[in-house]
Amino acid sequence: MVEKLALVGIGKIARDQHIPAISGNPNWSLEATVSRHASVDGVASFETLEALLEERPDISTISLAIPPQPRFSYAEAALKAGKHVMLEKPPGQSLAECFALEALAREMDVSIFATWHSRFADCVPHLKSWLSSRELKRLAIVWKEDVRHWHPGQEWIWEPGGMGVFDPGINALSIMTEILPHAVHVCEAMLEYPENRATPIAAKLKFTDPNGAEMTAVFDWRQEGLQTWDIEIETTDGDARLSLGGEKLEINGELIKSGSNNEYPNLYARMSELVRNGASDMDMSPFIHVCDAYSLGRRITTSPFEY
Amino acid sequence: MVEKLALVGIGKIARDQHIPAISGNPNWSLEATVSRHASVDGVASFETLEALLEERPDISTISLAIPPQPRFSYAEAALKAGKHVMLEKPPGQSLAECFALEALAREMDVSIFATWHSRFADCVPHLKSWLSSRELKRLAIVWKEDVRHWHPGQEWIWEPGGMGVFDPGINALSIMTEILPHAVHVCEAMLEYPENRATPIAAKLKFTDPNGAEMTAVFDWRQEGLQTWDIEIETTDGDARLSLGGEKLEINGELIKSGSNNEYPNLYARMSELVRNGASDMDMSPFIHVCDAYSLGRRITTSPFEY
Image (cartoon, rainbow over all chains, first blue to last red; front, side):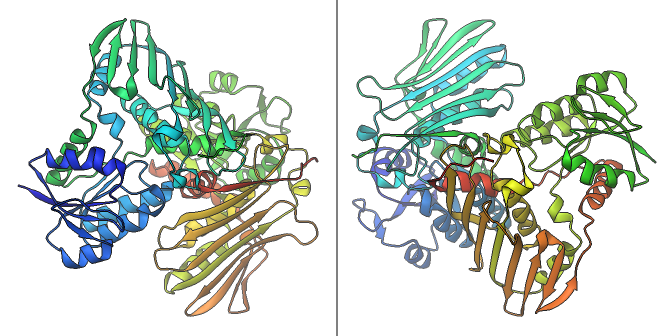
């Protein structure tokens, strides 16, 4: 059965990832887009979600690829109209919003999916399975990229709710929470804020692991040259290194997988499964770690940031 | 059936509130205290929780009245020893900690109670019931107190995880989340940090209400003279004012209740009920609002604070 879908927010991530993933999945049909500024050739285009909901009752599913700040009101309107909803990461600008959406989806008997795309990289299930039979000694996340390159001119990311460096950092946390066999919690955090910005440009986190493993994360948006999205893992029975944000996995120095990236195809396959089963997936654990880092963190003011 | 209880942390709140409340409830017997510095006349005293757990297997329940930063490790040890656990507010220094404790209590088949004492003030159920049949138009929390008076020399409150002005503010949020018939979420926050401190001295919050009511909270620790712990409520059918932190309730200008404060006796009665029913109560909604305010908030640096 083919589900009719509308994509809201036609920016870089929509064109690079969502549209190819939807087109490549026979269970989905991209029927419409919502954007004030952009459209997709051959697809019905609406300027507002209200107009879409009004004119296209046949569409069952709304995928939101807009910044997190307005996401709640779009998701709420879609759920209230009885639509299934798929949320780009982060799923909102506050935890309470996300819990409210989850409750609303349950009430409306529709599916909601807080997507964490990095968790759906092909290497992640392999690493999770490898780790499940081993005792973790150390896990170190190093996520260093150049914000000017990856988020050119994106002012919303520096505004409250825009998450700053946690926008990429939460990708690493979504992998970490997926592969670990048990829950951990942030026990220390240090956040660096440019003096002219509302969100951090760098952060260091330390976690408490129930079994005493050493766990840290370093996020930095000021990395020029080589970009780093690595998770290094040491166990009592070998080491692993997940790099390129989940695209490359080495175990004991040997290359296991590399080069494939099916994150968004996998997300849309998962959404299809959720809709078919009348289920939802709103795991908030990556977002909870970010909120804990904010509430627990020491703040340092650093030099102003301008694009 | 009388449950044997040990109280951990013998500070001001323990002496002022916990000990009288325990003594006044025939279902509880205060069998021991844990503190490095203090003890209670006539009650067995231990310097560490480990020693207590080792020597007094007959004690069923551990009540933690220590600062939030070390609370997790005490609660975890008590739960792992099969004890019921009662947590002073805030229940921990991170949300992930609290969710982990909830899961551990379920696994160990014991009760855990994240207490929110202000919620147990006598006026709160009255106000909740009055509000349940009315449509809210405006809710304004004004919580202004003198930190030098109420938290003299308490350095932990200014350290990461100590919550700063959210330590009293979360009391107001615990009342708000109790009396409202539906969930709301923080949509704007402004946090003022003394330049020499890791936690805020003042905060302003704005909430989004699904029915469009105007909802705000102002927390300030710099209040000299008259202290204010008020929640003002306007509905389409009358006004209410909860003041003195929940001790006084006026409706349409008329005094409904005043002067009684059974918060801690009510907490221990509730804990007794939870233990009897094999239930837990870990409502995190007040803490979630605080974490959301931290992650969403704009930060302002203000003059240094010294006691």
